[in-house]
Length: 138
Image (cartoon, helix red, strand yellow):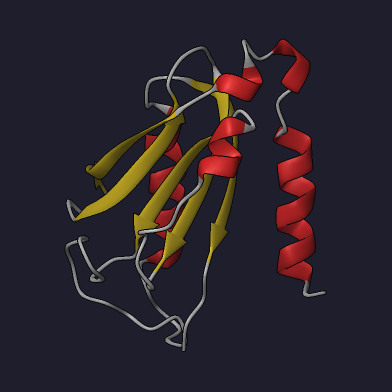
């Protein structure tokens, strides 16, 4: 198992909500906001889909940044009591800017990841706990 997978699992376990504290956890429904703009430090706009429970909170946030398209279903995470932010990487799909391969030594990926986590923490409903994941490409 790659070390990044282990790290993601450990981070997720650390921020996992106490399901017993969630109101009617089995009945949470998913609300999705599509292509929500997030401004990066250089002014570039990256777009994310924000998946959240339809009520209650605050909830921990899972952030996923990917160059492969953010259009996935995250219902099982939302119904387990998480807000999920799925973001297109710079220059990919709905996000502005120029795509830079992760194989290059200098990209905006680290700064964009940091700025995205900071942005996600300011959305309505987060508990202040976050975990992130980036899908690498070549």
